[in-house]
Image (cartoon, rainbow, N blue to C red; front, side):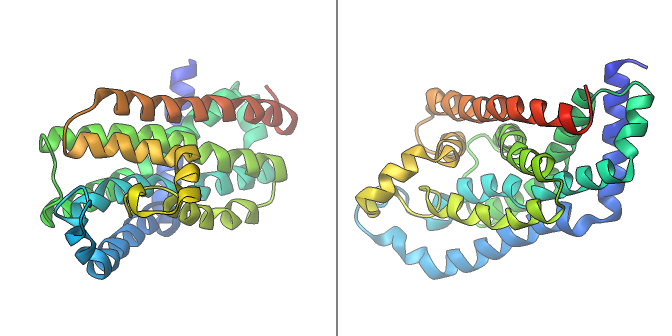
Amino acid sequence: MTALSNTSRLFRRYVVVGLRQPVFGFIFPIVFPVVLVIFVRSMFQRVADLPGFPLSSYTAYIAPGLIMLIPMLGAGYGAGTLIDEIRSGFTDRLRLYGVSTGQIMAAKIGFEMFRILPAAVIVIGLLAFLDAPLRAGLLTGVFLVLVMFLWSAAYSSLFYLVALRTLNPQAPVAMLPLALPVLFVSQALMPSVFLSDWLRISINANPFSHIVSAASTIMYGEFDAMLVVKGSLVAIGMFALLQIPIHLVIRRKIGK
């Protein structure tokens, strides 16, 4: 079988297995952003009345950040299943059939992208219903999903690295709360002009901030292609950098 055939077969298997246990991988990325939309919007909607707030609607302002939060929720699911596959000998059997570790990881990353699609449709639809702006309607939604795919590949790679390094199923689970400081140390919920100086410096160093900026300019305001390019390059660069240690570790744990 070809590399593409091996990868697609594995991808379909991961999707089927994931749908049999949908809570962590599929449902959690829907529930948490919806809860945030409802409560954060209700608590802070008056913030939009403050002088200097960039938009007239707080819902519109937080929409890009909440959409880009989706890939970070449930990111440890695929990494946890990979540990189970290594421990059970499933990956060894795949190797006997000529499946490379690169094909295994490609199928896993493909699954990470696929699992966020239901949440993306529901959350973007909910925000649109609540009058969050979509510059070009459905086309805007498509571009948002593409940025989500890039961020999902980058962020989930961190979980795969930790999972492969430790081979501990609890390690990816323990990393789930990481999404909260990543969210809060960004401009996703509040404009940086309203935040303290030290937090502004942290925001600039946070990759998620650049992803949110890309999503924001896709959704509303004056379109800035450079923000989209910068956000995409940040995600691609983060993904590429993490693949180096992942490649080294996976060769020791599984093989080539």
